Length: 122
Image 1: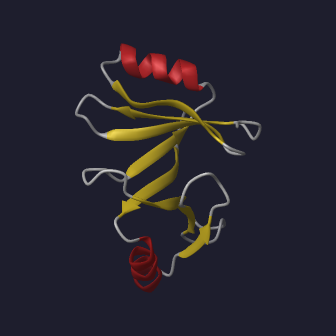
Image 2: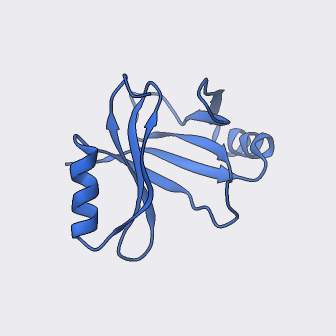
């Protein structure tokens, strides 16, 4: 059963947002060494319940926060989304060293991610 494994917070000003979330929740931020401006967020120790996430600069003023689910087969997950009345928001793309990712919309237009882990994705 796919579970949420990651969240993303798009922001106008990453430095101010990092300062805010660090002060409010004590979250730790680390610059990602990938092809886009992105910070990973550690929300607590792995021994406690919860998930970690990411912070990124907004591409669009209406860009929502996104929860991402772990799936075994991304192509199959996309087919199931479409067959169930959902839509594709952003098609399948590689996240270097992480896996294959797509953003979908549910039947009410909520955006969510689906990720097939694959360290060889490039």
